[in-house]
Image (cartoon, rainbow, N blue to C red; front, side, top):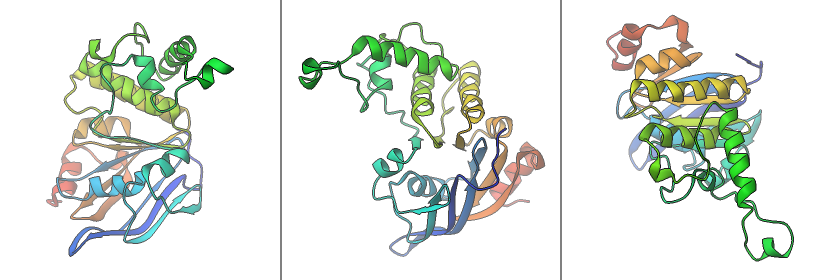
Length: 251
């Protein structure tokens, strides 16, 4: 685990109101480079709202967001993306009719050099090769990068989506329920990709209802309840029972 002293990504006293509904109330959270932070809470705890603030989808009503110590005002997810913050939601966002490499480079396509590139001709061989290399680098083995995503299993599709996000992320990656609906082996592959992202020095925020996965892969856990942070502690201080009790308020 590579952790620098200064936070890589941070929210300070963030609140988010939707009319009279308070979704987040004075939430503060830090993420360091080379750290995996678990974000957990029951339904309605405020996790989705916090993810939208972190990803640039929603602006906070109050409070600040800082990346590498610089206050940021995201106007859209594209702003956060351009700054190095990648977000993968529960819906992986893959295009099933396109190839693996086309999905990896979706929105970032490579074009051949010269006149043909200006005419819109894609550098398909280069994208196939780079996609294969990028996915292998984060621990994902896809038989053929020019294979259609529709031919992959559910676990493979999710792994490709996460691999795409990890390969493009330069600073932070936010994963919203990445192991949801996956079998044990497929979920294990996804957790391995998260560990690979940590080893690359990325900061990872891992949102999940599957507490054993959170306990396995994270360094620290932040617990939200009714829009507030009720716990922020090293993962080693929790077990399954105490974490569940903290989430539900029974402890």
